[in-house]
Image 1 (cartoon, one colour):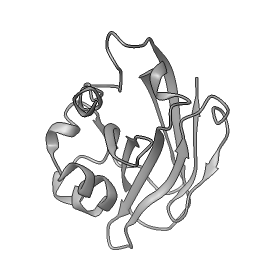
Image 2 (cartoon, one colour):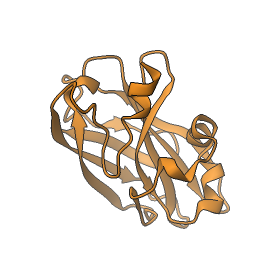
Image 3 (spheres, helix red, strand yellow):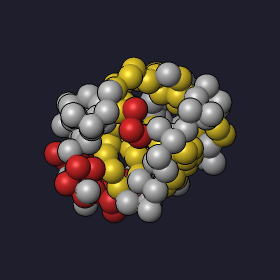
Image 4 (cartoon, helix red, strand yellow):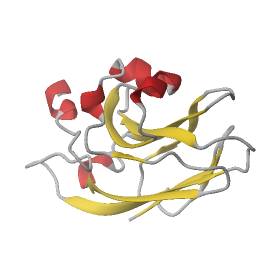
Amino acid sequence: MKKILAALVLTTALTLPGVALARPVTLTTTMKSYGGDGAYLAIYVTDAKGAYAGTMWMAGGKAKYYKHLADWYRATGGNAAEINGITGASVGAGRTLEVTLDLADALFDAGYTLHVDAAVEDMRDSPNDVSVPLTSANAGQAVQGRRYVASLAYAM
């Protein structure tokens, strides 16, 4: 099963090839006006046991700062292969990051959780700033973050 979960990470999305169909899902992460530089964000998924299943998106391009995305970094060992092809610019205070990915139907209502770690230069890091179970019922529902993330929502 762990090999199947490792296969979830693709260049632009998480899928389970041959096991389930995928659907486009739009992730919307809105940042608070925290008064600092742009935030680095790691958006990733864990399984029902809390084990890392794959990275969906990385906002921020300088790998030397990824260690500040503590929960993601611990889960991946900072392995750049986890994020090849799925990076974008950091996200400024008060701004919104919207990313559309194809996610396997098997990820929904199966115990998977979507997480966002956040880090801002010269400010405190915020591991697991927000998390939400990947369920059909949670689709379209905004979840409030702890420090830098004002809200996280996904729409199918």
